[in-house]
Length: 266
Image (cartoon, rainbow, N blue to C red; front, side, top):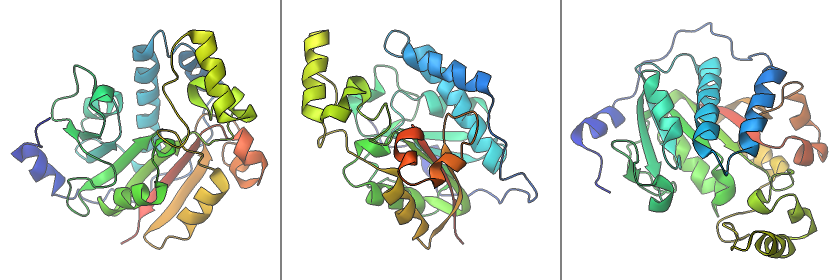
C-alpha cells in the first residue's frame, strides 16, 4: 500500500481548532432499543458483516460526537479499523478520516481511499496531528496495550479526543469466535470451535488475542499524566453503563466491552 499522499500529510500535520466550550460531556445512557439493535446485528456478524459494522460505525461516530462535538472538518485517525467502516462513516459526516491498518487481509480488496498499512505501535504521523484518535475493538489484539495507547495519545492534539474500546477477556465474548467456552480454558475452547465448525479458529491466545482486563487498564490509564478520563463505561449497555465499570470483580464479567473516552492534556 502506498504512503499517504501530500494532501493526507498536510492534513495530518495541521491540528484542528479547539471546539466551542459548553457541550455536554456526560451523555445520558443510550436506549434499550439501540442496544438490542446492536446485539442483533452482532449475532449475525458472520453472515452479514456489512450490516453489522455499518451500524456499529454509525453508533461509534454518534458516541464520538456526543463527547467531542461534530466531527465535520476535523481530522479523525482510525487505528486498526479493518475494512474502513468507521473511517467511511466519519468521512460521511464531513471529517478528514484516515485509516491505518497493519493487516492487509483485514483491509480487504476495496479499502478506503488513502488507507495506509501501518502498525499502531508506530503511526506515520506527527505529534498532535489528530483531533480525534479512534480505535474500536483492537486493544485485545495487541501484545503491548500501553505502548499502543501511548501512540494514540502522541498523535492526538492537546485538547483532542481519544476513543478506545475493547472486549475484555472475562466478558462473555472475551474468547471471540470460541466464546463463551474460553471460561474453560483457551486451548479447550479453540479445540471445541474447530470440532464444531471443521475449520481452524481465527484467534489464538497469546498470538493475536490477549487477556486484557478492565481493572488494570483503568488503573494504568488513570495513572497517566498526559490524558484525563472523560468517561469509562460499558459501550453497549442501555442503563448503568458507567456504574458497572466501578464495581471491582463484577465489571470484568458484566461490562462486556469497555469504552474509554480520554482527553489529551495540554
